[in-house]
Length: 127
Image 1 (cartoon, rainbow, N blue to C red):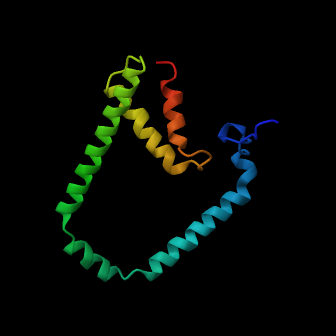
Image 2: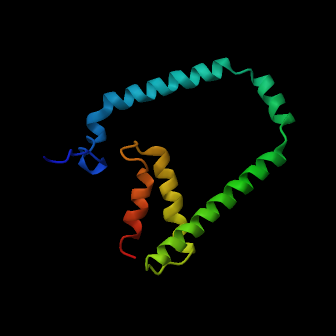
């Protein structure tokens, strides 16, 4: 009995060049424009400006501070795990790959559970 095979991101065919996808790109731009126009049409700009004027900016600053602290803790954790695995990495060298993996998780299709995690493994494989 053979084990079932799974298809991962590496098994997928590469995308066609952008020149061949012009119809698809045009459709995407048109759909985006229609959605943005609908959103703009539905917004009461006077009410939006009032809401911005009444916004408590200290909560945004506090939220950004906690977000930065969370990312910093995760970067320290990655550096610690890499060092425990025998890699010689500086904390500063872990920042860009980690934040890049966060960005990749947000834009890549979810072929696996965490696409950005694969990018971290690829970046650190030679360290």
